[in-house]
Image 1 (cartoon, one colour):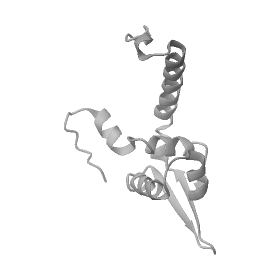
Image 2 (cartoon, one colour; image 1 turned 45 degrees about the vertical axis):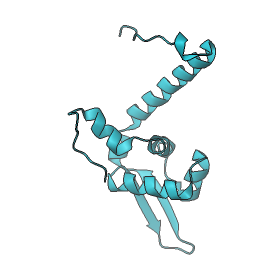
Image 3 (cartoon, helix red, strand yellow; image 1 turned 120 degrees about the horizontal axis):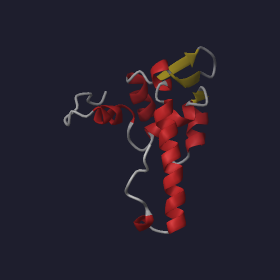
Length: 123
């Protein structure tokens, strides 16, 4: 498993060490909709190699975020689903999706990053 000791003392670093990177949040977001088989997961993501999907799923399983279930049948069937710990990431993943949607819309609307506001609205 990746390191859990934070060099910076920031809990965000720990979170990113478990679920960060290009593919893990996308895999986790796909699994929010329920369990999926390996091939189904790969097709729903697109652009990810089988090797990378396997590596990322193994890391998520090792971290206790994803549960891998092998069914004793021929041909073997393997399902992946979020554990309770993995489900606890739902608000984080939804917030990432919402932020990304807003960012993309603003970026497309302005045509450049220069038009983005750097301040946050009051809560």
